[in-house]
Amino acid sequence: MSAKIVTITSGKGGVGKTTAVANIAVALASLGARVCCIDGDIGLRNLDVVMGLENRIVYDIVDVIEGRCRLRQAMIRDKRLPELYLIPAAQTRDKSAVSPSDMVRLGDELRNEVDWVLIDSPAGIERGFRNSIAAADQVLVITNPEVSAVRDADRVIGLLEAEEKGSPSLILNRLNPSMVRNHDMLSAEDVLDLLAIRLIGVVPEDENVIVGTNRGTPIALEPKSIAGQAFRNIARRMCGEDVPFLELDNKGSLWARIQRMTGRK
Amino acid sequence: MDEQTVPVQIKGLRDGLLITIGNGEWAALEAALLEQIHARQSFFRGARIALDVGSHILRVNELVALRDRLSDRGVSLWAVLSESPTTEKTAQLLGLATRISKPRPEETRKFAVDDLGNATALFVNKTLRSGTRIEFPGHVVVVGDINPGAEVVAGGNVIVWGRVRGMVHAGAKGDSSAYICALDLSPAQLRIAEEVSAILTPLKSPRPEIASINQDGKLQSSPWEPG
Image 1 (cartoon, rainbow over the protein chains, first blue to last red):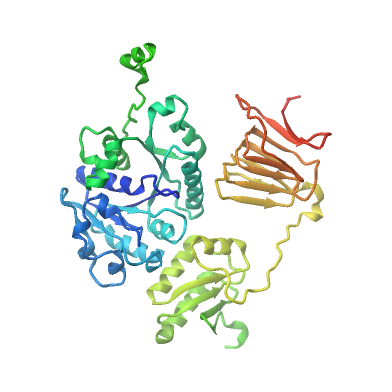
Image 2: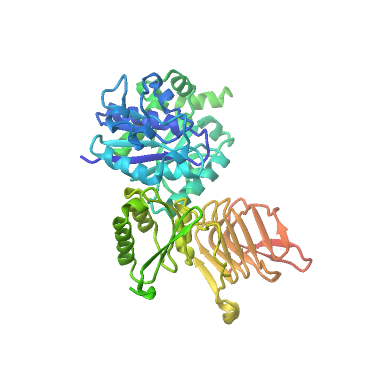
């Protein structure tokens, strides 16, 4: 079977690209798929840290491209899931070490090895971004419900359309339902209204995501976490399943209504 | 082969090779170029080339394919020079340079607007996303939204069948009788001729509006009344 190559990008930094790649990869691998993540942020690598694989790095993506090792040697196997791999970025080089055609070749080589290739794009719209999307069959744009992040996502979507990459799908990350309810935050509808692309997932704000990131244990491994559930749902939607969106706003529940009436919320 | 029929000319530059591609069918020219490279492998290995494609219009996938074929042969494509704005845009999208140290004389792009007087409009049938800028000497008609961060600058009027949330400048060459109308006018900023306005009170329930310069010389908007 030939792998599908998916790039996750955002334009703006710090909206959760790396976290999303780690979690979706873990979720896909938990569904039994063979997954390989590529850290496209050469010079500022951190996908390895988020996945807890930092201490296993021997070879990196630039070593593969420059022929210092075979592809298999640079694929670090995850310690929890047997069919999850990571190709880390080089820390001592920069984006110019890789060209878009290098990425296309690397992607084609990986197609025979796994079912999914997830590429973590760096922030920005320059060389690193171009490299990351060069090989992609599908692009997921991730954004936060913040005006600046949405503006950058809009720009990236425009660039992707110009590159004839087809319409990307949207992940809305770090949504805080109670802030939306008080009209202090853009709602999913507001964001979709502007960006006008397919929504593939809404991830609620959750402190445990940060804890997981720091420990190198992606939250999608926690069965009880709602953010983890959101990432697992994204993975299932990527596989073509029709999964309903999580009910994040619990204002409809009886208890919440009582709380509101008594002024406790 | 005399000079006229040579499809591919190669010239040394200070920082690489300049390859000029002649006229004709692109596929044949590309094949001729690759053949040249194949015939003189040792000369081309590791070379850095700038490609002057003249008036050929190249799409992203064609240029990507060529770049990959070149890099398979150890040749890196560094710049694409072109007379066609489409090709230039393509090259820029791929992160290739479109100028080398000695730029070709810049041709001023002239639209055939003057001959037609007021009758020309640019028709844009898509949503303009952040970072897009449209400049046109005549009128501009947009079917779609103008998102925040997008800009439309027109010599004439601007008509938007959609929402305006970016920047629109009508009558950019000084025509203060120009107007802007849209189904929902809630822009970051509007300009007509020299007037700039950022204080258009957004309506609670959006409806079609038209913005123009009133008798006092101020930019104002008013709801569009049918009939």
